[in-house]
Length: 479
Image 1 (cartoon, rainbow, N blue to C red):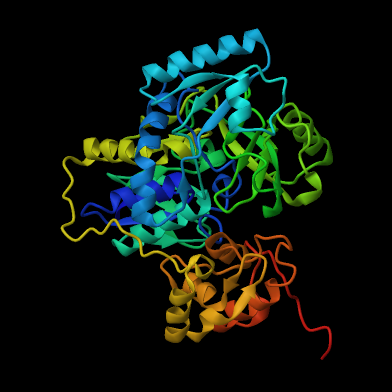
Image 2 (image 1 turned 30 degrees about the horizontal axis):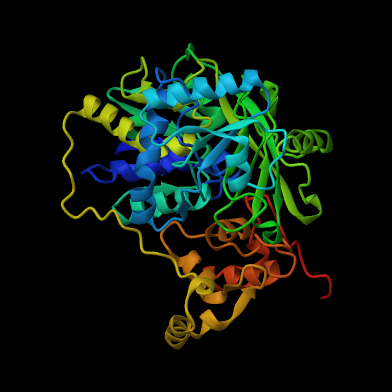
């Protein structure tokens, strides 16, 4: 019997699990896929929004503003990259300048620091590659960029280090309430918990329907497609560049990433009910992304594209985050967490802890809780003296596996053997970036597979790209 079962190991579920692991609770994090952060968390804009966009009367507005302020501390504790590069919302018309003024006033009500509307001349000084047709922009210095997938992994690692458990490949098929607890069933096994926290993303309404026929909200899948440019495009922009927002979202942005790439997207395409897993890219929608981004920057070097990808957002029928104990006592919904969900994640975790306290009463804090995650080794970032010391301790740090990103065998081994370690090609890519560079794994993937097979003591044919059915090797071509 667990005190709490959290369903969904994206950045929200993992943040909540880590925050609850501060207390004397028996917690399990359930994930239907083969790894952490394989849903919306792995495919989004990676922006920590300043928080001026969502209404000051909404949960989104309040939690975005609070979450942004928490990011520096959280990322420092968890050794996750985070950079406050600032953002610009660009206006091309007088009507859009009025929109900037509305955003400015809303941001002030939320306490967003240092917001100001700047002139075309000031824009050009900051971002010389932007369109000369931009007349003004809202500058938000507190906006930042991070790595959402590494944040989710770090949250989970730290939670496990503090006593929580993780169960992968546990797709919830049925939930029943028996007395004062819940029985959560996959196809193969059952978990029993006193409290359930539903963080199932685009499937959160379906999960809630397992316990009540009238969930009271519906999640609509909204797809967004992106271009990722090579690091040779670094400097195209230095801050996050937005158009004025519309009813479909914040619009197609152009932003640097913490690793030195340039990201362009997304569009916003509402999908049918049956398309909740539709993550393919399409030529038509990618062309639309190019068209929209060209208004911000005329000459984007798309010939430097190294990959395109798609993310799904959980669009709630309520128009706001759903964070509450449901009408089923002990069942907590954390649903409809679309943008600014990543930005709000630390604050959402605190909000859910407060809900749990109301359900269970005062929680006892662990005396030995450790909020700090051990930093991962990043050989490329070390000085020559530091590299020599690491190699002397472990020679495999000298063996470079991924030349695009300069990732060593030692770093890959670390990523496999840490808490909640990587077990797949994409899992290792999310943790230490082999395959994230220009060749997208074309050269390093076979070597990463060999390391995975050796370290996990499995046959190389058992190594998967992502899910349990994503087979890479089916047999030898020459016997």
